[in-house]
Image (cartoon, rainbow, N blue to C red; front, side, top):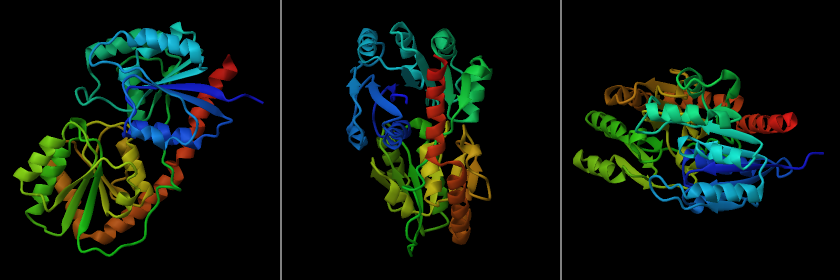
Length: 365
């Protein structure tokens, strides 16, 4: 019988976000006799670490802003000491750690891409492309969380298709489930996302301004925090939408929010496979989202929601209005969304895919 495989996850910051939440929930789900986990955080960890319910060492390297080469000797020494069998890095900010892992003789080195940066939503930055190609010899295998990202890695970056797999994020459909039906006097839209330019809540608020000119019986809740908060708050104040748009702040567990709203809306300009869309669908909410990244593979227009172009408040407002005028349609599409989550998006499917990937490399050793 195999001893548990020791996987070391390297992330930039352990905070409340889709990627970090995905990691925490995966650690909690996978049996301890299958995997042993360590987390290395390049910067700092927040209270999300308290949600991990299994013994999991967390090491923070306290990286300074900008280039901080001092973290690499620290990382090398740490990897040599803890001796993981697998290093799993996430997104561009940790990619260079693959080279350190190779120098530290870590046998299997996995790199996952979960999305793109707000400054480079199309992923066409030439310096980043060169960096990815230079680091490629150090990487055993890549994971894209959507077909869109995997195709970008092979076609634009130029990586070998044999080194790239698609493992779509999954959601715990037993935890994220519809709540009890509630009678309300208003129709409620929900956005759960980091307040960041890449999530483009600016366009969502513009759509609400358009909608508010025609309808009074709706509310939008925006749950999350981030660098765009002050600008978005000012936008709501300037547009006199204080009675329509509510900022809920950072919410550790948004389950009750999903269960108390009617439609989920995501206005991002770039995405991978967003966890909030999966959670909303599992809770029986239809989804209105931008047609970016892996979202079109999740939402079927006219069946489980609607897709709109990015940065188009007029189209976004029009689709929101469809549900506002036909709440029965929202309920029907929400049931289809739940069925899709149960059949295709359950987290255990993703867990098994990662286990097979990790163990496959152990078997090759």
